[in-house]
Length: 343
Length: 167
Ligand SMILES: [Zn+2]
Ligand SMILES: [Zn+2]
Image 1 (cartoon, rainbow over the protein chains, first blue to last red):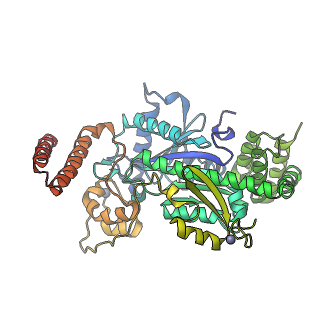
Image 2: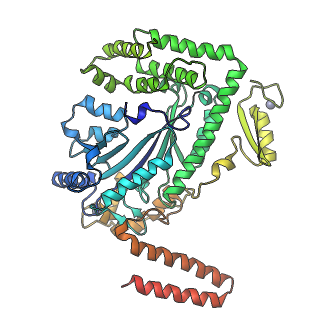
Image 3: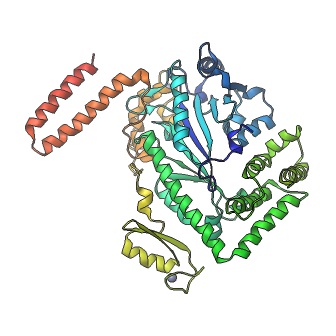
């Protein structure tokens, strides 16, 4: 598999993935919400020209996808892979996306801003993701006249993204912090520091697989490097907390701990009907078990693959047709069973 | 798990302390954690660690009231319309009512001095104006410290750069 999300990155026992996104706009077109259909087409053409035009350095490894021509399942499958935003998937006009072959880079066109350049990496790789994003940005800038202001930096449709236009985010798997309730303290501190946390907390945390995304809220007044290093240092501290609590929990009651993990594995590899919520919850336990060395005969890449396949659109895409919710739950269980079959 | 200090209540807080480069981790109940905090001026999870590397904090300022409605001549978006939708219409809008956005930007971002990447097209002029801003800060400091000779030198440097940037 060449796709990045199957692979494991640094600190992947806690960090699922890293994403850097840059918001950019054309200087001489109204922003997408104020744009005529013609202008929308022009922006699409100019971006395509900037990437696929003659003599362009990056053209070979990219594909352009016209959002209008995709069916809802295809669109949703891209959303589940984080390659496009839900907003772009629902857009009615002139939305497009350019995706690299390895699905690490996606350039959304005519989303809220003319351009949303994003790079996705496995594990914790903020610096690497920023370097790549920066490179793509430089290449586009050779032919695109960006909306830039000395005082405010890169101009964006929403004032929350102005300045660097950067959003650095990491997806974290925090089962131990959730189990002990310490997650609450982490979330409170993040919010005090102007760090946004997305993820369900409360009754539904387990159902979303104990996944949390943290990202910067401030995009003006700091350099890109400062923004990235603050997200990095907070992430490192959360990693330390999560790891030490995992160990502590296991030490306190190894039998109970391992029992929970093996029960989840049993359910996951034998169920005949399973909702995506239940699957994500069980996957979280199994993932924890693999990383703690409790389960030794399952490759983490298989779990990464399942993580994506259990989601509705990618499940239907893999089957090749639309499924009713009931059919999905049956098919999902089957897909998971096959992936987890041990030889 | 029981609190490692009182051994009575359930531990709910992990306290990380770094004393002389030695990291210690304590699992405490909420009561003991609060007691511990009083001595250490920090919150559980050691907020100071989290703080390092973070430069700007959002702070509150009130939005001044203006009656005059500014309208962008390029996209037709008015300042009032922006106030309703929260979305800007085009890059020219920032020229037309950018000043009015400053309090909002301060609230969102804290520090609003742009320090980030510069597109190569704008590189020369932005670099120059950053240089001027820096010298002006030094000039203010020099005057404050009554270092008038230094101030005179800085003033000349600023004039010199300003004449370049006006060309
Ligand atoms: Zn206690
Ligand atoms: Zn405008």
